[in-house]
Figure 1: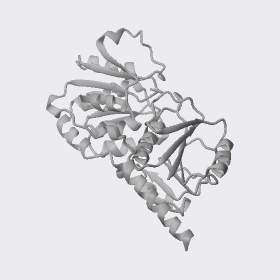
Figure 2: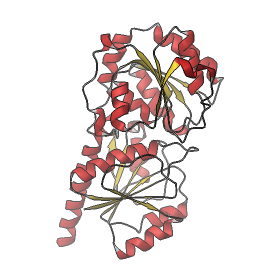
Figure 3: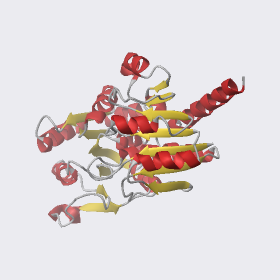
Length: 331
């Protein structure tokens, strides 16, 4: 089978869409699917081996390619697509799927809708996407397979981790480092990427271990050593949960609110919304609350939150839908 994925990723909107679709692509390739990714962005993060990367200026190019070679599936990930683009997406593949965290009323004729945070949106999805099979809840979090790994027992962990995703769109990395230094941490690890607009002449640079452009495996290994972490409320949240890291998360975008609040309610992390108050003070206050908590218990709660099998469950559902549609066409 052939899967086409359509997304964009850049420092302005972040790289969460790319990270989670990379997990889906990996699962598809493991089932011997052919995978192509289409984007208007210049991708700076490594893609899974076997994914064919295609840059397009417009989605009409995508449609033109499908007239020559129509894929079984097109999977859409993004919150910025127009009605005209959705009309094109509806014509490209035999089956259409998309992921949503915002109750977006896209004009998509999807046969599959994935919403790891959207169990509360079920009535809306049933009405808006009547043909779609719904995969809702944390069983469908898109984690890369590298996060299924051995990690240090929590009692052996020493480091504090700062990781604000691929872009750090709110520029909070150094504020987090300063808060950790003030709290007495001496073994602080800061993760950066080339896509970040981050000042590497900061006076605190000598006080941190700097990691640049980590692979998924390297990121998982670092998280597996972390006693606590601070980051943005994107895909990083689920990665840290899988490694059992009590964390403080900054909500920097609308699509992060539901997930962050749901994970906070599960008892292993704290979240704050930088769009409604002073970020630096909130970050420091939440860190104080985290350090006053039972971190060992939070570690246990985090480990119970997600697993790495969401992508496999989604691909299994897509294969089942494809078989069913072929059976119907053969009747």
